[in-house]
Amino acid sequence: MPPVLVLAVVGVAVAAAAASWAVMSRLDERSSVRAALRQLDDHVTQDSRDQELLAPVTERALAPVLQTLSGIGRRLTPAGYVDKVRDKFTVLGTNTPQTVDRFLAVRVVTVVGALLSFLFVVVLNVTPFTGNLRLAVAGLLVLGFLLGPDALLSRKVEERQHAIQVQLPDVLDLLVISVEAGLGFEQALDRVIASVPGALSDEFARMLGETRAGASRADAMRAMDERCGVPELRAFVLAIIQADTFGVSIGRVLRSQSDEMRMKRRQAAEERAQKAPVKMLIPMVFCIFPALFLVVLGPAVLQIQESF
Image (cartoon, helix red, strand yellow):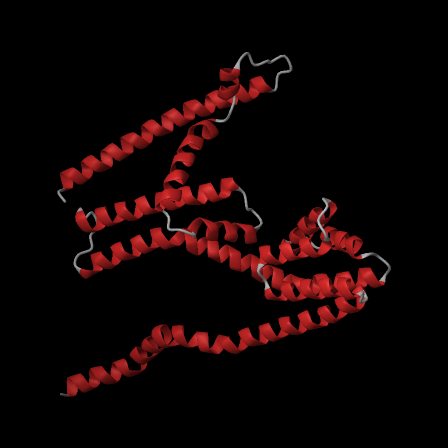
């Protein structure tokens, strides 16, 4: 690519960025003025246009773009993909149509970014790389754009499920203490929600809200199990449902579940500790051993080379 053309493209990009910055700064000033006017007690909107203009510029400008991109994403994604994304956001506790639409819009933008990166790297050759290295860089950029959003979303889902698994034994201990002290199961859950914030407490709060809205305890707990998808929480839910069905003492069931969950957490920690040496072999073989061999055997190889 000729240097003159590169400079022209860079100049156009800088000019566009400066113009965008000027327009956005102007809009920010207007939004601050509107915000100050809204704080006045005697400020009354005259018609629907004034009410629309009082909305933030980001909402008025980005909402139509977001709606268009999400519509394109729904049409281009394969069957069942939107349901899988919705299920992942359900595990995260943010299952709303707006979050799914934003994610689909991001997916459309990343697909466009993948195409542009391939165009600039392979076709236009704007990078200093050549040959197979250029193809490798283009492949990494395309994979990053295409697989990045799904990988980040799956990572967040795994982190939340792991947080629920780690927090469950401590929450069960507090439930056991509260129930044996004389509180009912729902009152004990209220105490847990107030004392131990976290993902599991949020799910318990949602479950209590469903029961107070009219759902049965069994249905609310099954819905919580389906939302989280954690095996340990599923065992706890099944134990509580069986205790309600057969009339078993809740305190005894909670104590047995607490002991079992604590044992499972200890076994999981021991399993991760046993896997650590195996995982350490990869950086040792590819990073530490070559440098060590170079330091130890390098002088000997040089001496052998000089002697021959």
